[in-house]
Image (cartoon, rainbow, N blue to C red; front, side, top):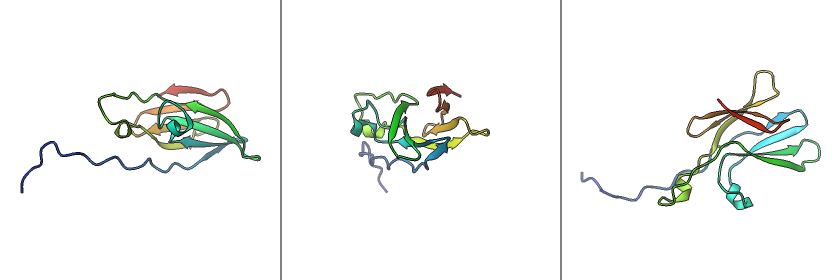
Amino acid sequence: MTQMINAPRAKRVGPPKVAPVVVGNLRIEALHWGKKRGLDQNGGYLVAFDRVSGAELWVLKVYEVRYDPQMEADVQDVFIRSMRKSLFGGTLRITDEEDRRYRVDPQTRTVEAR
């Protein structure tokens, strides 16, 4: 069997499915495709909706994706892998595809790297 040198790599698979989380009167979802909305990156954003009306209330950047201009951007996207409520339910625990962890307070819209 011959080994292929400099063979093109397959594009990455799509982002993981992340279930919405309800905190108080908010339904919070991971926003994977930020660039389609005019944002500066794919992955790393949360969007909050009013639970009753469904109206979008805000978008929050949880972390920054640093892109190397010498590489294809889509293979560098880092998406949110999991999102869940903290033990007491007032904050969210976010994990990205690079296994970095964050705590997000939806009421103050603050992010803390863990």
